[in-house]
Amino acid sequence: MNLIEKAIQIKNQALEALKKVVVPSSLEDFYNQYLAKKGEIPGLMTHMKEAEDKAAYGQTVNATRNEVLDAYMSKKAEMESAKLNAKLKSEVLDITLPGTEEEIGSLNPYWMVIREVEDIFLSMGYEVVKGRDVETDHYNFELLNVPKDHPSRDMQDTFYFSPELLLRTQTSASQAHKMCEMTEKKPIRMISPGKAYRRDDDDMTHSHQFAQIEGLVVDRNISIANLKGTLELFAKKMFGEKREIRLRSSYFPFTEPSVEVDVSCFNCGGKGCAMCKGTGYIEILGAGMVNPKVLEMCGYDPKEWSGFAFGVGVERVAMLRYCIDDIRRIYQNDLRFLKDFK
Ligand code: DAH
Image (cartoon, rainbow, N blue to C red; front, side):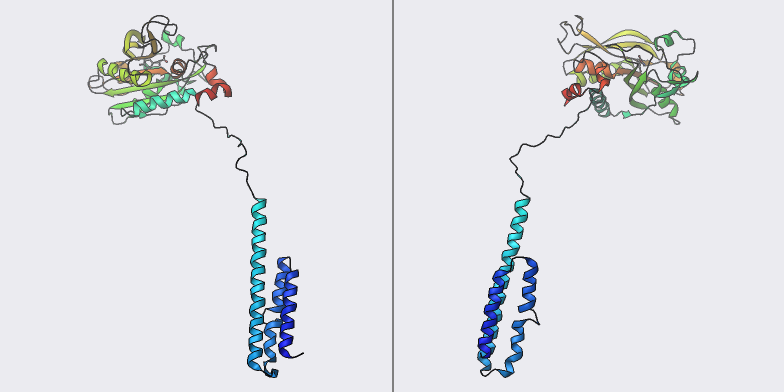
């Protein structure tokens, strides 16, 4: 067998061997045996000196190398695409299968009311002030013109930790804090949402823990017209453009005069229905002109300053707004109830 025949024999051997390769590791072995630098095919060149027809031998060796390399490359590509196809097949997703729905929570109506009231007053330039649940008798009562023996204390049956420390019975304590905190006495426009506590027995309309939003404006020349205008705007934004308010005289120790504010019934428009108990109006909040004694105790000279204040019951507004029949629902965290507010 001459050298050319020998080269052709190696080529045929290589092509046969390649056919039997099925796994990547034997493909690598194949490459090392035949095509790598020290493999059989490059090795053919070492016999060049012995070849009779050097040109023909050189061409045969080149052709052999090219043919085997081409076959090797296409085998390699074939194996890689088979591997990729297998991977794709194993990772296939059936996007037509019905999905599992993620449960997304919703805001409790309590927070919906607080956020809405905050938005309304922020848009009027008020700041939102955080109060504290644990208060002193001084801020919760004394500074609000409710001395120790004052009869109105009976109406706000209090949880006491000690004679001086208590759970606040009203967010009005935030008014006193705000005014006292102002070292340099400047105008105030604030609301302060938060919890209040009273020793009430829980029933459909009472809860020992509830939320209020306190409002306070202090400036020069504030009159009851400012109070009425502000609360009218609030009522319209909260309960609808057609709403009207009316003020009924009332009593709170920290305001003088004091009023109870009613809004025309958003259910019947004022004609009279079950919701407004036939009166055409629904009571929504208490308010009044800040009592000069309170201004004075909190460091605002009543000869120079005046103000108005109001307090809204959050649950009451939520109950009217969303037709909730029992205040306890707001606190029970029953998902069937909460889902209605999505
Ligand atoms: N603090 C009162 C209450 O809990 C509500 C209230 C009434 C707040 C009149 C005020 C106000 O600021 O001016 O019943």
